[in-house]
Length: 215
Ligand SMILES: Cc1ncc(C[n+]2csc(CCO)c2C)c(N)n1
Image (tube, rainbow, N blue to C red):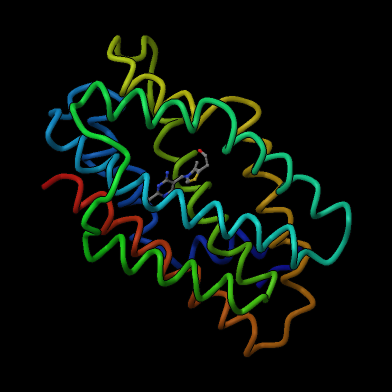
């Protein structure tokens, strides 16, 4: 591993799955606005359950970060997720698709993803928490930044792209990568392998999540 490039080292170790995620046919169909309503409903209903656990993991990042400087961006992002587009998006999109945000039977991949996030959260090991957050955000920046203008007219597709690209989201992903890059060099070999294992499981789950959404 080269100094200060832990995030890129982790990502490269997850090929070819990483590229399969960011070029996944389901993600590509979102960017083109061609996902059938039934598939989009299944995907967003499951993702709403995902985002709930993800939000709890953000709280763990606030609690477990090793400095005040590191806690602040999580707190800021948490406030955004909880209060802005993200929340109203799910309600508006699921409403438009004829589904609610209420009880949903979890697909196996959603269960498995929530288990991984809960493991990271309860480990209270900051670098493991960052690894899971970083995969979730970086892969989403990956597929969304492949979208070309004009974005789809359908707001369910268009806003889901817009939420995952743009300068602010890019900055957030850069922050998460920067945390891994900062922490990587100080880890012993066992700990580094543990981070890789968690990172790899998360990348595999992102792929399974898109596979599930495709029906
Ligand atoms: C399976 C899955 N993986 C990653 C994301 C990306 N993501 C999760 S929470 C969040 C913050 C607000 O957008 C973002 C970008 C997702 N939605 N679903």
